[in-house]
Image 1 (cartoon, rainbow, N blue to C red):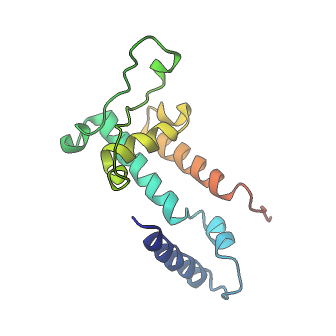
Image 2: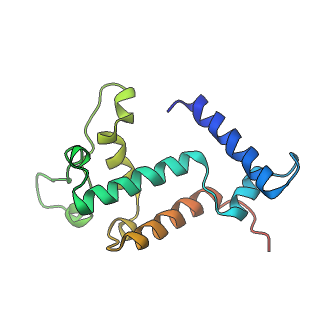
Length: 144
């Protein structure tokens, strides 16, 4: 997705946060999203890619996606062998990096080992949302 389209979707989400909270335009949309535990659009996309990747990794379905991701295979024994990583294919074009075969391993490998190794789907989703939420709102002041 282009940066322009992400920006447009983020504006819509910010407006929706103000409508839901019945807040004036002068109120920070970031703070309203944080209070509602809403992730920004970019992080929602990351969340969805990670969830689909988790389901594909654990169940092997859908088959058309399971063929697009490959476990990382080191040429020699490395400490990263047990980190549950995926191999990220090299792409010549920046447009190719948006394909599931590239974006899924990239997002997956950026997650903590604790998140990647979750055995229960509910645990994975909780850890993932917490990580994304903390990353986005770590610099926001936490009002009581």
